[in-house]
Image (cartoon, rainbow, N blue to C red; front, side):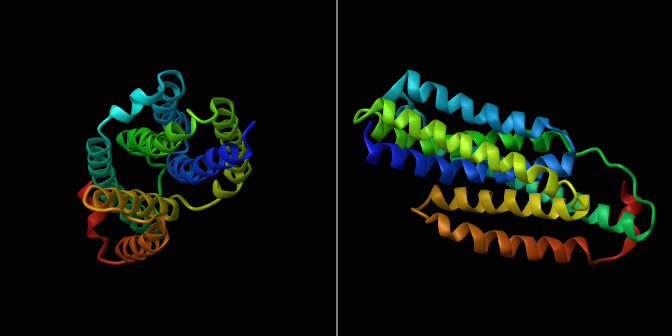
Length: 220
């Protein structure tokens, strides 16, 4: 086994799949449905299975179009979820909190996130596979195991977070990825911009959700 190829495959898998797992966790907490993990997983599998079975043909997928469509979906659901977070806060203030159904459409964003992150991972794996197929495969699966284990360990802890606060987190995540992928369609962008982007959106959405008047409750 080629240690360099293994570590490269492991590194890119951890980098991209951790981002997908963070969205899956947030969607799971906000919706209370394990389907969030299924949708992200399906998005990953749709790209990764052809990567190892079909190889270089995956490079023919229009990355620009995939990112643009995914960014638009995330923008729509991120804005929708921001409004939902605001309503949740207002209900809790009026002591009229009820169990809300998470917008079903938002779960489909999990699929988009899984597919885009897997596509970015696949592009690197395609460069590694010709050098050592087995090493790239082992590196990828090792990375997946690490991400799955840590996601499982975190699941019970994040479940305790209030739904309104978690919706703020989910909306900030979706809008961060949306802005990031829109930017990537125009010019190369470093992943290091994601944390400050998330902080900016989270602060803005939190302020929006916790401000304003109470009349919005009657708008439903």
